[in-house]
Amino acid sequence: MLAGSRRAVGDQMIFVGSARHGYGPRLLALISYVLPAVFIIAPLASFLAYSFFRMENGQIVHDLSLGNYRRFFADAIFVPVLWQTCLLCLSVAALATLIGYPVAFLLASLKGRRRHFLLLMVLVPLLMSYIIKIYAIRSILGGNGFLNRFMLWTGVIEQPLTVFVFNLNAVLLTLTVLLIPFAILPIFLALERIPRSLIEASVDLGASSLQTFVRIILPLSLPGVITAATFVFVLAIGDFLTPQMVGGQSGFTFGRIVFSQFGTAFNWPFGAALSAILAIVVISVIALGNRVGQRST
Image (cartoon, rainbow, N blue to C red; front, side):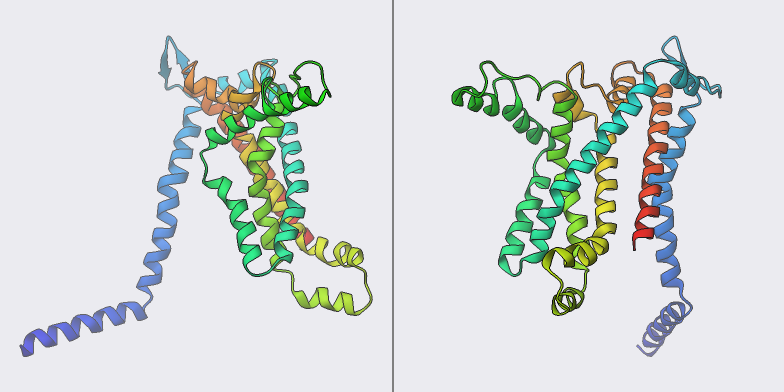
């Protein structure tokens, strides 16, 4: 009994001593670095290595070359489609931010149950299936959708419009509707962090509501706006399912090209090269957004 109790006390002292020496925080730090390296950096590195291989007779030839990247710049289709996709995603980010800002401002101005209820309404679409939401939007914008039937019933048009389906306009509208919640949340968090004392001081000094918004609220919420626009752009540029379902032949985006290399052409090296180029664009946009956000603070 006495020996066992001494052993237990000794083990406890060793544990306390190791904790004092900082082994626990070091172990947590090691895990926090190892897990991203294993599950994120290593797959990306192997994916990047694939981009330097080539396909020959349906087989991957493990000879390092820049042929895939030369093909990207030499072919007449890839660079224009990437540029067109970037412009499309910039438009989606701008629209989602412009629509999301008033909603976030309303949420930040409310208190109590109304705020929680409306915030829940914003978050509920995120819990729904992505494909179901796309089909719901198609049922509204399609040639026989609710919008066309309503305008035919009211006599606004004489035949169904096809301007909002199976083209880039449809991709723009669908992506904007789908990604608006991702724009609302960062702006809402930025608005919530604004000290109420500044707003109250502005009102006490005689500033109007518009002056308070322009000079205090908007500048202090700009980091959230930039984060929202960057977040929406990154999500939009990597989306291939929405253009596939609502874009049609004229709604071709870079994400669909990448998907076709893996899912149809089975050219993994070239698909990996296109993915690496897309990753460079995404990282550049994130870095630019981070720099602009730091300047605005």
